[in-house]
Image 1 (cartoon, one colour):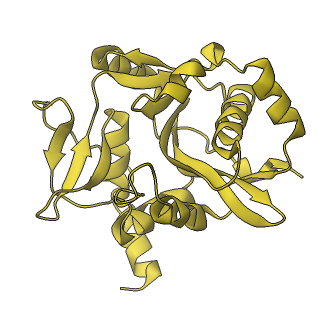
Image 2 (tube, rainbow, N blue to C red):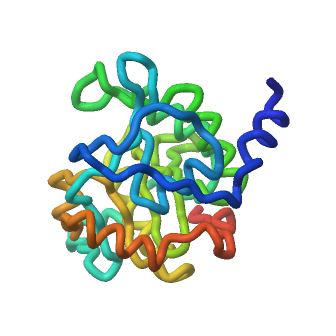
Length: 239
């Protein structure tokens, strides 16, 4: 299948809304299925995201409870991190090298080298690349001497940003990407909430909190919608 044929098939159900089943497991909502624009956007609108595959190769559709979220007004940037933001050596760009960033997230070892970004297989790369072309998936990338050294990507629906993955090959890259993203979206697009999926000590120290799933879903029903003017993030540059 050519990329054009894949893009047409993937986007055919863009305006359709699919209802996922009630959640019976504390993490996994459903197994199986495939990727299309309508399925993926419906999942995120319901607080669900694909997170790898099981041993049989079936997609795992997940929704952690509680949910780690960060409200923009709760973002805490310490004095030391303010200095990092002011004096870092990186070039920052939005919506540049989206596919390259996803591959970097996939290939970079994490705390457990066996994990890396192992859930990001070719089907994820193709699907999120197409969501990027449709204006729903976005990225923040950082460069050192024109070399990509990290960033983050996710989906932006309505006023909610759904963080998917981040990677850092140089000091402070992840925090700079996150702080820049939140500040930009709050200023330009009235960001109401950033979904970080699962908590980490760093996220909690920057102001993130754990939100019961019922409250999280309630927020999404009001603020996360695919029917919104798409952000042209490529206008942002910090040379």
